Length: 562
Figure 1: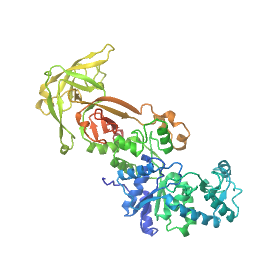
Figure 2: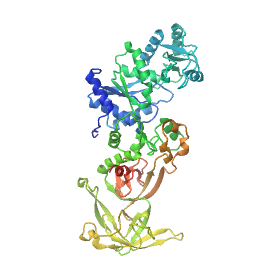
Figure 3: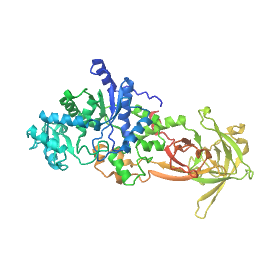
Figure 4: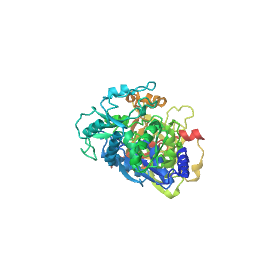
C-alpha cells in the first residue's frame, strides 16, 4: 500500500500538546465499529484518522468491536470489517478486542456504582422514561424509583442478571442530574434486559450494557489515550468523562475524547439503517452492489484503497459540519486509475461501419499502446478490417451545430488506424440507422507521414467485427436524486428516502470490445477510451465479460479547482 501523507489538523495539534504537557507518554488509539453492518465510505474518515494517528506518533491502534447489541450483530460483519481494514492498508497493531471481552468487568463496575449511590434500578417503561426525561427547554423529573435504597437496587440488578424479569420491565440507570441542560446527562441507561443469545458469549448474559456506558470503560481498560469520534458525540463527551471519572479507581487509563465533523457526501446514503433497508427491500442486489457506498460495493465498482485514502486527506479534518461533493471522491479515483489502468477500446451502443474501399477479406494487424504516458506498460495487437463497430452517438445523419464526429461528407480519425470519410448510411423501415458507409484514406495510417493530415473531425474509438467479443457494461449514477443534496441530518431522516431513489442509478448495455478484456482477472480495471474506467465484475462468464463503470472521464472537480 502506498503511504498517504495527511496534512496536519487540529486533532494532531491537540495530541502534540498533550504529549508536550506530559498528559500522555504514548499515543494509543482505537477503531471501534459496531458489527451490525458493512463499513461504508462514511466510516473511512474515522478509520483512517485512528490508524494514521497511531502510525504518525509511533503508537498503537486497536480494533475493537463494540458488540453490545446481540440482536443486530453477526460474525459475517466482523470478518468483512477486518477485510476492509486490511484492504485499506492498515494493521491493528494494538490488537483485536471486543466489548464483550469486558462484560464481567462492566458488571463489576455497575455493582460498585450501585453501592456508591451512582446507579439505580428503574421500573419506568420506555414511554414513561421519555415523558420523565423532559425537553430541551424543560428539565426532566426524577423517577419514583430513583431514591430506592442501594441494597434494593443491587438485589434487583442481580435478579435482572439471573433472568427473573421480562424485557423492558427494569433498567439500570446512572444517577446524574435530571435537570441537566444536556439531556444526555439525565440519568442515562446503563443496562437493559435482552433475552437474545450473544454470538460470542452465548446465553451467559440476559442483560447487556448500553453503548454510552460500555464504550468509555472499554477505551480506558485498553489504555487508549485519544478516543476520536464524529461530531454527533460531542454532546456525549461530558457523559464519557463522567463514566471514566466515576470508575477511575477500577481503570488503568483516562482517555481523552476529541470530536471531528462526520463525512457527508452529496447524493450518498450514510445510514446503515437505510442501507440495510435497500438490501432487504431488494432495491439493490446486496451489500456489495456497486451503487452502494459500502467499501464492498466500492471495491466491486473499481474504487481503489489509495483513492479513498487520498480523498480523506484532501477533505481534511475539521469541526465544521459540511457536505463534500461526490465529484471530489471521483476526482481522486480518476487521479489514481489514470496512472495505473491500461487502455482498451469498447463500444457500448454499437452501430456497424462498412469501409466500401477496403479490400474484401483483408485484415490488417495494428499495434496500440497500453498507456500513452507509460511505455513500460507495453503494447497490444488489434485487427482492422472492412467492417467495424462505433458508438451510435458518434454518427448523425443531420449533424447539430459544432458536431465533429461522423456524418455524411465529414472525415474522422479512427484511433490508432486511419482517417475515414463518411459517405452515407442505411436505415430500416422505422428510420433507424443500421449501417454506416465510409471510405478509407490509405495514406493516413497511424504512425505514417499522412497521419498528421489536419481534419476537423474527432478521433473515434472502434472495434473490428472480426476481432471483438460481446460484453456487458453496467453504468451507474448516484442512488439518490438531486433533491437530496439540500437535505441532511435529521431533515433527511424524517422523509421516505425510498421514494427519492434514482430510477436511473443502473443502466445495462451490451456491446463489443477488444478480446483483451476477457482473459483478465475479476477486479482488473481498464480505461475504455472516451468512455471511462471500467472494472471486471465477478458476474462475468467466459462468454460474457461484465464490466462496471467505476467513473467517467469527465472530471468536474478538477475543472473547479483550476
